[in-house]
Length: 363
Length: 131
Image 1 (cartoon, rainbow over the protein chains, first blue to last red):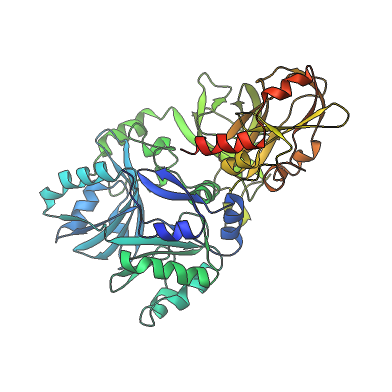
Image 2 (image 1 turned 120 degrees about the horizontal axis):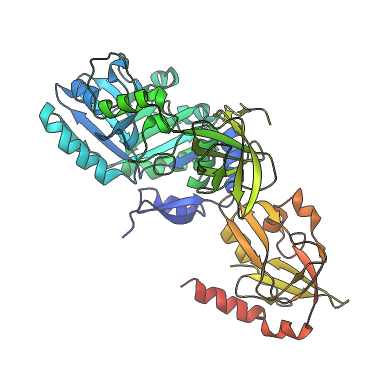
């Protein structure tokens, strides 16, 4: 059985091409993925991300719990509403999921986790939380709409309540604010400015229609994927999973080593890996020859081992094929990719490829 | 509904074939196929002069989503390829039966065309595939 979000009828009305995504019937595009992608880079698009899982964590020791649960350190969150990106690791240092956690008050944090990992995430949280007396509450009655692009905030703000509008307009990046059951955050997964708005499921369709009337264009999961790839953002399940540590997934920056006395799940394994040295790394690739990079293509380097593309696509903004690839640590500035039996030349580059509509790498 | 011109012939792998007055046959992919694949970003075409056999994978259409082989609906020699697709692969999306043609063949046996579906049969085939 596939699940449907509260916006299912809107997707059908908007001509969305619906596909199964992690057990959810979701729009891959509404006609043209490339037009939708470019529209987010140039104007404003909206995504139904209601399939993602909102989990509220409550209890006096919630901060202490998260300090132990997450590889990044929630003590970096000092102001209410501030968000943190983190990996949640297993004891071996493998990534159970990547997530956003919002600090709301010392006894209330909110997490947004991936749809495809929902069951194991909840199981893991429920296994770890009791020791800290923390309650884990899923919020399936909430929908989530991401509004992204250079004009996203200007188009969305007039549609918010009068009460929250000034606070929403004044949000700094990576902050969120409550408005009753609504939660408006200046976050996203596209490399553009915008909001991610959590709202009651029964208000979602009307808000979607208002956004559409304000000129915000429905944008499918296809464009969401090419936008995040250009923005240099990892996708769980493709770029990392439980067999990969953050150090092998270009996520070392999300691991808070200090203070050294903070014990978090996976720390011992990660420290061992850091001391022994990792053998592989996740890099960006820009294809020099003509063609398209795809997931799982083999990467041939001067080193002894082959690498593999973890996320590959055509970049609508750069008009070139780009990818993330896991390659031997020794890989230099160039490599070759086996594209259907032909070895094509690629350059190794440092993501992001695109931020705020501008190319970040030399073509 | 998909656009299925009645004067063309179709393969089960969603290529179309048009008989030209000079005996050559132009090949492309159907409007239904381009719609399923999504925005085209790169097209790999056969070499002029290359001989292809029926059902041989001889071109690749890559959309932003995936790469798909294109199979020669009939055997023949490649007379011409659509070089314009190098700069505008999106023609396959916007005009699958016109500017989005892929290549032109000199058939080894023009009789092979009779083995392909006509427009009505292809529409029926699409309807059956949808279920």
